[in-house]
Image (tube, rainbow, N blue to C red; front, side):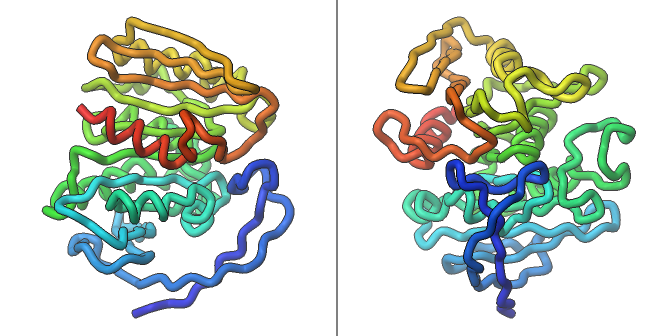
Length: 305
């Protein structure tokens, strides 16, 4: 059936950013969307363009996520799993990241998971129970279950599952790329930090391309990291570059944006963008004369090994 839902966006004006748990001010006009209800993710099949609400059982708990189906598909489709910020919603991230146009043009399935309300709709980004908002919420298991359903679907190219995330959602994307690395083809993270846990090491199984974008004036996810939780921004980018086996590093300055590229002999890149004066935002500036989302997709899809 079709359920009318009303998406009330709290809008952070700096750069069309979604509001995170730490920053939700102002208001935006109410937007009405049609979302089809779907309760059995195991029978996930291609359908006409539009948003669809799905549910899946994880440790006897029902978890939900939205899917956006592209208007045109040809063969098996790649996937972007896109994580909302803390205290946000899948619906807000759908509008914030605005992958719809590129999804329709390139035939991409976009999945928007919803963090558990028991944890304040904040992602549990740590493995240690004492470090999480709610110990009983298994967000790693939730995303693993979604990926498992994609792997079993003949309409999905499970070798092309990419991650995207904002703020707390960026931390979740970092962690999934790290701990479920064998399933992930690449990632893009904005205004987030990498909560690397020494006691829970990752097994990086392949070179993993990534785009990392942070602002120097982001006081919620500062460049210096968060002591006891997450690495400084540059250190996080360097960690991925080292894991990939990067041998080249170059930096260019364009206006207020510093762009550092770490590259492996095979061409896999980590690209780090530091926006001077940038805040806690979902950034939309052009890169290489391309709108941000076109650049993101060109980077991820061309980096596929």
